[in-house]
Length: 85
Image 1 (cartoon, helix red, strand yellow):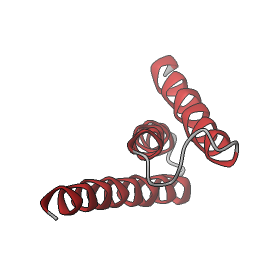
Image 2 (cartoon, helix red, strand yellow):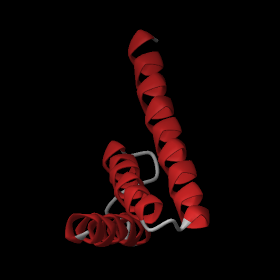
Image 3 (cartoon, helix red, strand yellow):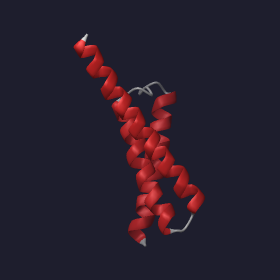
Image 4 (cartoon, one colour):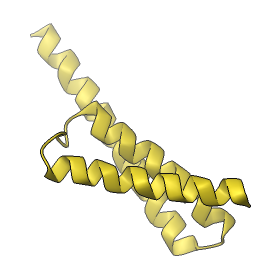
């Protein structure tokens, strides 16, 4: 259970750090780093909440995970389009 708690705390820290860096203007919502921090953080926190049977929080984190993947997809897609122009 210690590993699950460490995952949860690390995931929460990563999500909050990503948001802090966003509002502090060190990252933008269109940066890969911001999206990856959200993807990894939400996945870690999602595992934690699933193991603790906190299903509403688990669902929220899995949705956030997919939002992050969607963001990465669009960043890559837009960069490829700019290269081809």
